[in-house]
Amino acid sequence: MNSSCRPSSSLRRLACTVLLLAAGLAGAPAAQTLKCATLVPEGSIWDKAEREFASKVQAATGGRVKFQFYPGGVAGDEPDFLRKMRLGQLQAGLMSASGLGDIDPAFYLFQVPLLFETDEEIQAVVAGMRAGYEQRLLEKGFVLVHWTHVGWLHIFSSKPLASFDDFKRQKQFVWGNDGRLASWYQELGLQPVSLSGTDVLQGLQTGLIDALPATPLAALSLQWFRSAPNALEHRFAPLLGGLIVTKNAWSKLSEADRAAIAPLAAETERKLFAEVPLKEKEALAEMQKRGLTLAPKPTGDAEKWLALGQALQDRFRTHSVPPAIFDEGLKLLEARRKAR
Image 1 (cartoon, rainbow, N blue to C red):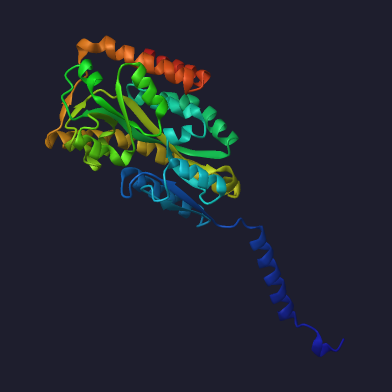
Image 2 (image 1 turned 180 degrees about the horizontal axis):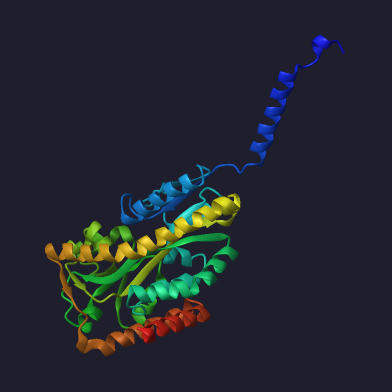
């Protein structure tokens, strides 16, 4: 070959550099944007916590993992989230225990009425059953990134709640898609009225419903307490949830990036379990300033409340929560109470 046609050493070095860079890029994991839908309102404590978590994840992974949020139900309801995640249109969801229960009914344990009494009890059961819940979700195609505390349901009412019989006589809101709970209420002598969440305020204002279970944060932010200015101080049921990512999307993250996410997820979980109860106390105090009457559960009716709780728990164990899961949770709950 004529020497003038031979590549110079500098050209050869440039070509080698390009090839090495190309090989390195080919071996590097592609950046992933995880589209995450949720019903929590934009600017709420949960929205802020998740955006802070996402910012830390992006920094810790060098920008290889990003979250893009769709808050406030703009992507639909929780069944819509699941459908879109299974289709690959979404990769993540911040779900309630009810939504997670649509994936695996074991999560319904964390919405059983009159079972849990304190935040410490919830945390003890979550800690003891975490591995099992993670495995159950994984088998259904989802990764549980972290749990979240949504709050405690209290009974809010447009009428005074001086006794258990007052509660029993009132027309109780139940979610329109939960025919099972409505039928149980009827069996137990309660008066359920099935509505969508968007119809609650109108239902209270028109007398279609008299009472509803709601978290203090929801009752304050949605102004339900103005039409239901009476509430029981006693907690009716907890509401938990969790951030999940599809197994397919999670598997595309590098092992190093998944390892970087784990402590940040644990930090976010601890933060929410610590801050949400404090925010609830503030919400109750604020509503009391604006006219809410907060009544303790009438002690004279303790046996009636206990009987209602037991009847609902029996139905959840028989028809909703897998019995082995319910019994495991109850065992941990009783152990916590004995230790206390």
